[in-house]
Image 1: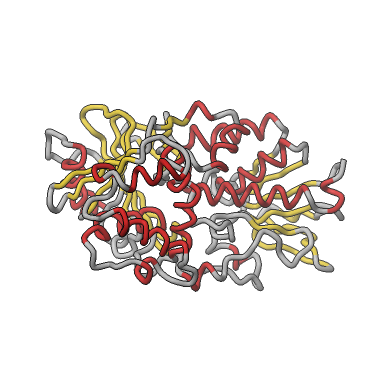
Image 2: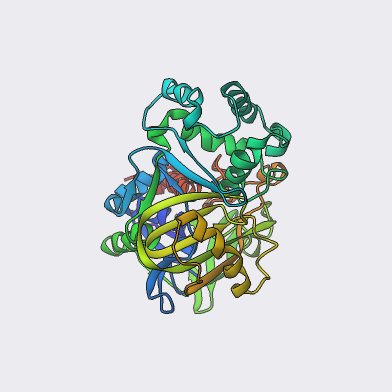
Length: 424
């Protein structure tokens, strides 16, 4: 078959779709408006820090099956390190209290029950029956926010549910859709600690998720056209018939397909009749150059504007989610506010702030409220040959890295099962 699939967008959703289609032997062209691929997952060398840093930090867990399958497809499983057990260290920087949530590395509901009834390993200030009732409340939460499902007055809400909600959903509990938080629990924690172990990259997200994908596509003869913005789509008889770029027009063949894998805020510019979430929330990442190298690790923060601190080598990367009130602040102010918390969390000897880099993603994810998730479209559109991918589509998960890669897989499967393109 000579039919071509045009993928618009080379973030991880678009790359996930592209590598699957290339693996299936399809002819693929990828168009990306930016001069680089990977979107929020790209990595780059920062001259001021003299280190490779990630544009945005992403939490990966060993139960993220689509991430793992994607890594296998691009031959990059060795670029990810999975912890031996699902252990997450936290520090309440306001009260200088430290604890760890330790789900161990078991499998099945039995191991989960053991965790819930083992006080030193579960969240502090909460009994086993309360925790079980709250998890079940999330399961029965369709149309509700996290705050509507859980008692926000309980002490453990501040130390467990709130930072978890903000860190995973990029939304505060009074807005975040509880059913999406349940979906994360269902696919990881509730399968046992073996499926909730944090996975960290050896050399950054780019080296793990982007560069190997681009190499795989190059070997398959896929043309990835960077700095090539698709300005509009042409339609004829219920199909996409062409793409308009700054450099000219691309006329599509009778059986050509298109996958639109752009961010949620960009889709309306290409599909004027598309109903999709529009509101966004920001994420801030601050990268500090540490004097002494640190092992690759992840630590949680409570009582801080930030939720996570990732360390790798000389870099400590701090993630602040639901950061709409911070994005307009001066970078130096942001770095200075967060640095004392980093010192506490990492038990650093010095308090002098080192070199830093602040990265602001003003519209990192769509606002994941119950009303907004009702607007998430599926993979198939009303146009016969047009499909959607992106963490904002209806993946059943929050707007996470796992959700983005899953959306690309679903789009590829839809393309491969559509008419003549799916036949040999």
